[in-house]
Amino acid sequence: MKNKVSKSNPTNFRGVFSALVTPMKANGDVDHAKLGAVVNHQIRSGIHGLIPLGSTGEFYALSSAEREQVIKTTLSAAAGRVPVVAGANASSTRDVVMFARQAEQLGCDGVMLAAPYYSLPTPEELFAHFRAVNNAVGLPIMLYNYPGRTGVDMKPEFIARLAALKNVRYVKESTGEMARMTTLMRLCGDRLAVFCGADAIALEAFMVGVTGWVGGIANVLPQSHAQLYELAVVKKDYVRARKLFFEMLPAIELIEGGGKYTQWVKAGYGLMGHDCGAPRQPLAAATKAECATLRQALRQSAEGRRKA
Image 1 (cartoon, one colour):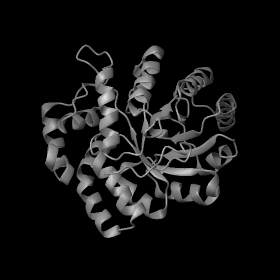
Image 2 (cartoon, one colour):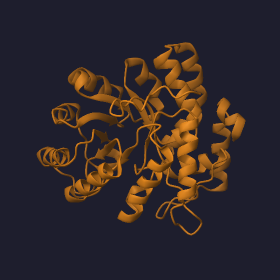
Image 3 (cartoon, helix red, strand yellow):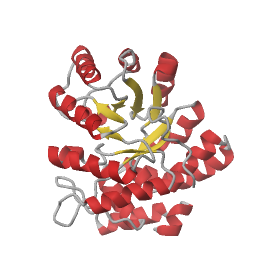
C-alpha cells in the first residue's frame, strides 16, 4: 500500500502513527537490529508516522542512553520517509526539557508529551511545565492526554489554553470519550489537530474528522490500520471501512481492554511473524493461553488470517 503522507511538510502530521514497540533481546537489552526491522515493516505496510518511546515503547523502563539510541535507530531506519515524533516524557520538567531538546538535536520531527506522572501537578503548574518545554524547543508538540496512565486529566478547555503556545500543534486524546475529541475540534479549530488515542473508537473518530490515529496495536495490524484511514478518510467509503474495522475489533478490544496493553501488543506482533521479545519487568510476557486467545482474535481480520 502506498503511503499517502509526504515528508515534504513534516510538521503537517496526519494519518496513522504507530506507537512503536521497543524490541528486547533474551537478556533484556534493546535489540536495535530488530527495531530497525520494525520501522521498515511499519513504513512498508503504509503507516504514516512513527512514535518511539511512548508507553508502548516502554520509555519508563529505559535509561537515558538507551532512549537516545532508540531515537537514533528509529531515525536511521526511517531515513526521512515518514515523520518521527519522539516521546519525551519524564517525571520532572527539567528532564522533559532535556529529552525534548535531545529529540530536536537528533533530528526528530516532533515530540509527544503527556503530563508528568506521579507528582499530580495542578492546572497552573502543568501549564507552566508545558510552557517551559514549548519555550525550550522549536519542534511541534503533540500533547498526550491519558489520565489512566498519568493520574492527571487535561480537560478540553485546558488543552485549548495550551494550544495558544506556539509549538503545541497536536493532541492525542486517549480517554476514550468521543465528546472530548469533538469538543477539542470545536474549541481549537485549526490551531490544534486532534489524533484519536483510543483504539476501539478510531472509526467513529475518523468519521467526525479527526486528523489521525496514534496506537500501539498499529504495530500488530499495520496494513489494516493504514487501510482503515484510506477507506474512511481518503475515500470516504464508510461501508468498507466499517467492515474492516469490525474485523479488527476483536483484537483491538482484547488488547485495549485486557489490562495488559504493552504485553499483548508485543505478543501479537510476535504472532504476526515479528518477534520483539518480552517487555521489561515489572511487565511480563503473555502466557501461552493468552497468546492462543490473542491469535484467535487476530484471525478475525484478513491481515491476521494471512499471518497469525
